Amino acid sequence: MAPALRPGPRGRALLATAAALLLAALPGTASAVTFTAIGVVAVADASLAPAVVATNPLVLSLTFDAGAMDADPDGGIGTYAIQSAALGVGTYLGTTTTGVIQVFDDGAGTSPGDEYRVTLVDLTPLGTNPVTLVLSLQDASGAALSGDALPTTPPLVASFPDAAVVALDFAPGTATAAVITIVPEPATPLLLAAGLAGLALAGRRRG
Image (cartoon, rainbow, N blue to C red; front, side, top):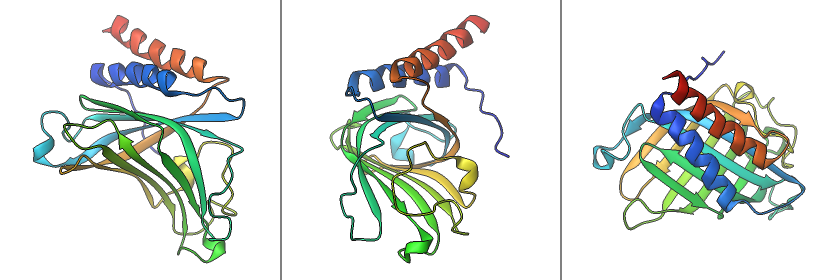
């Protein structure tokens, strides 16, 4: 069982800021699903310091349309456009509306196991080049997914025991983070933002 993550002051600040960025980037839609992935940087190139270093908390908020159509219905891999994303790691904060969720199902014969993969591009640059991100959740047994349709609920880290990682390319430096947990959307994106901001505020008061 994954240990509970207790964000420090920097982590609480990232939670609040990611919530604000998500609200700013979020288009209104009745079928929007939002989840927040929380992790810790395991490895970071020295060239990224001091903006991003190992042990930095990572917060990724992602919104997609539960009714999104498969961009490649005959390809054997489900590919679905995201609506918006906000990333906070170290002192870096970025947003994008460009990216996809891909669903690889072992039963379709397109992969040796199941994988839920998020690829984001054109995130706010850290310097001169846009940042790219890949979130990969993997289950070698093939039990996590039952097809390449887009799941209408956020993925559970526990269902993907073989990998739960985020790879970041800041061009030229790279970093890798381990995903600790994925928090599902509350009733509305507004409640999500309020909850994240409230967590950060409560932490400051206890401090």
